[in-house]
Image (cartoon, one colour):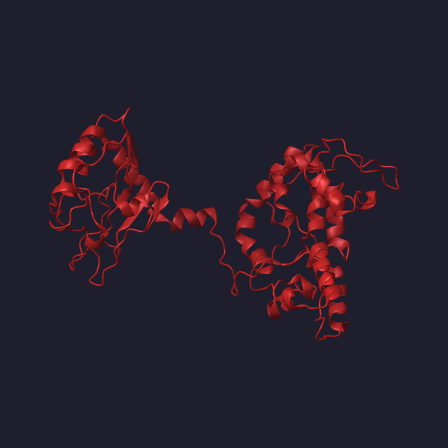
Length: 404
């Protein structure tokens, strides 16, 4: 085992297009042979793996050093810990078993990417002693972890977030949650498990025989069950960092617009006076105009640090929201629908018109947004708006997320 771990070398990663049982070619040949020789019966279809990659027992064995999993493990095992030889005690030994043992195809649990405590016997639990007189205590780590559980978890997390995994994780998703979970794609991918591990094979409520029903439930409890299949087509590949930088010019526009907003913040209160746009009035003129991102406004003003807040309230009470004054499409400073009830509820606020893109909405004089004075607020939350005339709708965007 190497003393160092180079995460930039693809050779140091598992092939995510294969299930655990198919990682070792020698073992895979044996499993394929067994699959061919197995009779495909109505009650028990052919399978490659008699065990599963995730189960209650596997999870508790991994987490046995941490409460409440220690007590749950004892309850699961009838009041006893497992035989010391079978307890999770070494990362290298576990990896070797997963690669070579025909009955061991388990995956990791999420805790291996954020919880170093699972590797330390901090509660001093007596797990017994192996036949080689080795006491089961802290988990033995690979040399590249330098004896540090924190280093092991950090490097494991770095590997998970690496460019290699980002470029290949969708292949693993296809096996576990996607179209390679069942059917001919599963056979072609060497991903066929015992039939009771699939959640939709048998309706357990329809089984009348108590003994048979109990046997099936015991099988699921002890050997695990597949998650529900989420998709029947290949999962899309995740963009690499370079692709994100080159394929999302919108973010560059956003950053530039936000910088422009920061520079023009003092002029905000004046522009807000014409900012009420009811969703029913969002229209787009038939004549396209030059593409532009016209206005960007702050998502929050605090009364303590923003003396313009009282002016903002006055603008709301006397502006088009109260009087019903129209906001022309040619207005030099179209602005967001501040305080609109739809936006306040987080609902989509967009317009898609058949007559083409537009540069600004109109508010008819007969459609005031407010009646009477707008209540005073200590802080006023406002959406950021991009008015893009080359899009087929207006996109109302919060700093915290896109809502349309």
